[in-house]
Image (cartoon, rainbow, N blue to C red; front, top):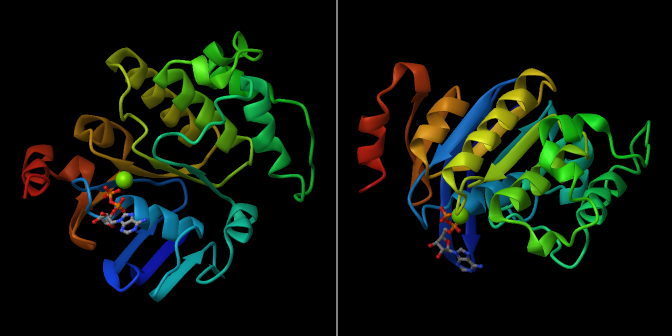
Length: 234
Ligand SMILES: Nc1ncnc2c1ncn2[C@@H]1O[C@H](COP(=O)(O)OP(=O)(O)O)[C@@H](O)[C@H]1O
Ligand SMILES: [Mg+2]
């Protein structure tokens, strides 16, 4: 579904990503692991078209995406939940969700109503539709950001540190929602995480990024989380 072939990216003249190759298959959940500053956010931004690729290729569902604008990638089925969630604090929960719906107005079968499956995944949001998104807790805002991304009807959901700054009880709800998104909606996941236990329970495979390069990869069920954790302290 997604293939990166030796992708490099820079900020000005400074290299940030150096020859990253990775793949995500249909229905797979992939975790990108790495310390702060490793280049994880830049990698997701490059995949969704918000940061230019200097060298290498990005192919999504057999379509060449390298150099194409973010809107083309969204229309092709990528949805992105940025680090810090990117919700609009002064808009209501319902208005935030409608942004996700409007985003797919150019796709066939466009329908303005908020679909019930979103509230089946995130029941708490239904009671909060009229509330300003800015007053929600961190966990509720994360659920809103994921729900909004799902309204674009993606086939690949990219999430940047969805557990960051969220209390443990809500982390569990987010984990269950991601499992359901995968199993019931058949959406693939590409997840940046620093919370290893969470990554291990959600992802099939992982990549470790250090200083913009992949230094380790494997299947989570065949690999020791504790060995991988050592790579994250280097
Ligand atoms: N807008 C920017 N301009 C210049 N350098 C940046 C910018 N954003 C990030 N960087 C640098 O790029 C590197 C990777 O950042 P980032 O992708 O945010 O890493 P991560 O998400 O793994 O913490 C870091 O060294 C960071 O300081
Ligand atoms: Mg980051």
